[in-house]
Length: 301
Image (cartoon, rainbow, N blue to C red):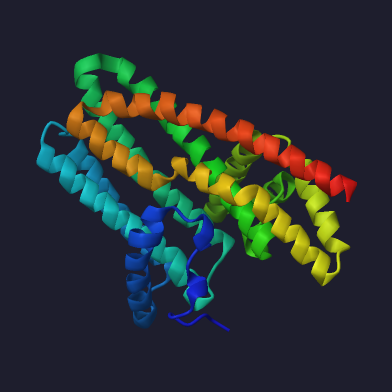
C-alpha cells in the first residue's frame, strides 16, 4: 500500500541525516513532494526537473568574478538540492521506488556537477591554460569516488539497522548481471551503475566478510537475537555514518559558494583534491577499525 504524504517514513533515516538536510532541505522537499503526489508527477520527472536549475547555476559560475552570479548560482543549486530530495520522498510516498529511479537520480546529479565543474574549468583555463582541465577531471573523479562511499555506508546502515532490503548495496556479480541482461538505454544506465558499485567496493575493501557474517548471523537468529545484532551494528556505525556526511553534496555546494566568492575555482578544486581526499583516508581508517572490531565480536558470538 503506498505511503501517505504525512507518513514519516518518506524521510531518510533521521539519526544519521546531515543537519542541513534534516532542518532545511528535506522539510522543503517534503512540501514539494506532497504537491507532486497530488499532481500525479512521477519521481523520475522530478529528478529531471532539477537538472536545468543546476545547469543555469553552472552558466552563472563561469563568471565567478560577479559576486551576484555566484550567490544566484548558490541559490539555484539550493533549489536543485530541494528537488533532489523531493524525488526520493515522492517515490517513497507513492510506493514507486525502483532501481531504475535510483540510477536516473544519480545520472541527473552527475549531469549537474559535470556542468558546474566544466564551467569552473573553463573559467580557470582563462588564467591557467589547459592545466585547468586535468585538475577539474581529477576533482570530478575524486568527487564521484567520495560520494559513492558516503552513499555506501548510508545504505549499509539502513539495511542492517532498519532491515531495509531496498537499501542493500548489490553484489558486484548482481550489478554485472543486471547490465548484461539489459539493452538499449536501460543497459547503458545499468552499466554505469555497475561502475558506481565497483567504486563503492573498491573504497570499502574488506567489508565483504562483515557483510557475509552479518547476513548469516541474522539468517539464523531469533527475533530477539536479530534485534541485538542490529543494535550492535548501530552502536558501531551511527557516529561513523554521521562523520561520512562530510562528503555529502550540501557541503560541496557551500564550498563552491565560499571558494568562488573569496578566491576562485582553483581553490575549490584544491579543496576537493586535498581536503576531501584526506577526509576519505581519515574516515576509511576509522571505518576499517570499527568493521574489524565488530567482525571479531560476531565471530566470537
